[in-house]
Length: 297
Image 1 (cartoon, rainbow, N blue to C red):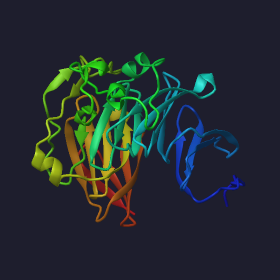
Image 2 (cartoon, rainbow, N blue to C red):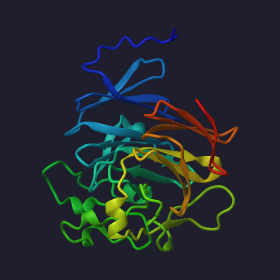
Image 3 (cartoon, helix red, strand yellow):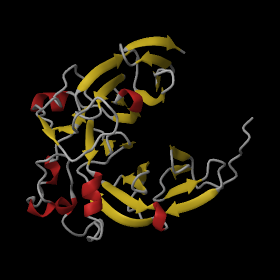
């Protein structure tokens, strides 16, 4: 029996619950709800964010900046200041709904992924620079002016043609095929890594072939940073787990073993093993160094 009992009266079943590390809060969404609720780890209600046009999808906490980021099915990313009463400070429109979020403390980049298998990298410095501008609200304004992309060749938002916001290149693609079209030209960026082994921060400009992008779509179910290894893991409904260099976007390894889609992942930093759970009712333990499965449960 659990030592903690949820005594909250929910409107419907909980669609998703996310533990926000360093913020020490649990964010959860009830099915069909337009609000995101926060509670403490012992399930004491803390706060409710209600200003969403549609259902929230995911949340992440950026500890250095004190931002709570929430993605929503209305294609927005909302940034809340946790040190100022969870005040909304920035809202950005993306071209697709971002199903999952992952903050990398080592690369200082917010990663997100969508139903098309695209993984995006968001420049938090640019997000901060835009604070104080008018926020996007559904049905108002020009969404292309609030769109960001990572890279030194980033255009000024006001210079982007109207309706051109769908051209933001993905940082990488979680694809069904064994091709990795995200291995594009590498350029310097303003992202500053911490830790040894890298002389400068870099980001990949994805050059995605039309054939590969059409044949290789896969819903990304989760993103996870393997911080001590300098990797980002993505898993999808194609049953694959892909490992990426978190600074360049280069595909390093593809882990194959699940017979169905992979739903969740966890990483044990001390033992350096990755655990994945799939719709095939299997838990698989991996050695990320060699890309082999150690154990199946």
